[in-house]
Length: 253
Image 1 (cartoon, rainbow, N blue to C red):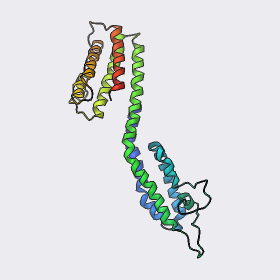
Image 2: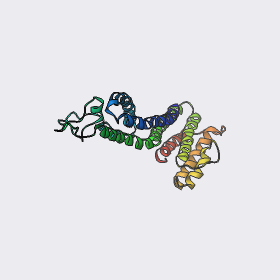
Image 3: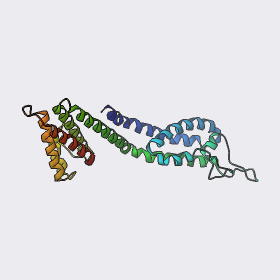
Image 4: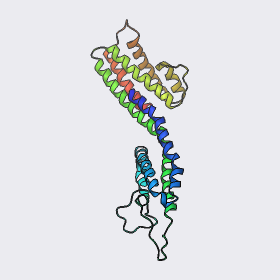
């Protein structure tokens, strides 16, 4: 659970990092207006690019080549023209070629400002992915945690069938709580049990009656393991609980 909480707590930090980089737009554009500021621009931009690169790589690797293409010089480039002149050219102090009248073939500063805006637009579009990406990461962490806990329950059965069943019940309860949150289903209790969750999830069509009945049966076995001390759960019942919970967490999201 610690790893899941750590992922969730980083969301705001990542959003702040995105915002800081996006807020640098005006400063970079102003520095790019005059070739005299190219050194100062290069210092500022290089730091910005290194930080932005890591975010693009993490949140949209499929757009990383596009992002870097506005900065990196194409190693296959033979002739510099307006289409392949990039930010790295400007940072290195390379100007545009001159025509026969000793005039630059294009406005370097204007072109560099366009390249910056291209990269900023990519960054702005990615900022909306943060929650979705982190939710996906969190989901994977939950899945790994659930699998390991069910494996532990199967091992624990050799020592205590009650403890094994109780652990499997906790996995089911926590999973259904997460399903309710994912679907924005309001549950009146602050710490709802499986029984508190089963009816609302079925009533909101998250799953059908067959699944609802299956969860009811799993709840009965879980309660037998956790509460009814006078009756000992059988090994078959605990096996049914563990396999049933595994089936639910793999099919109900």
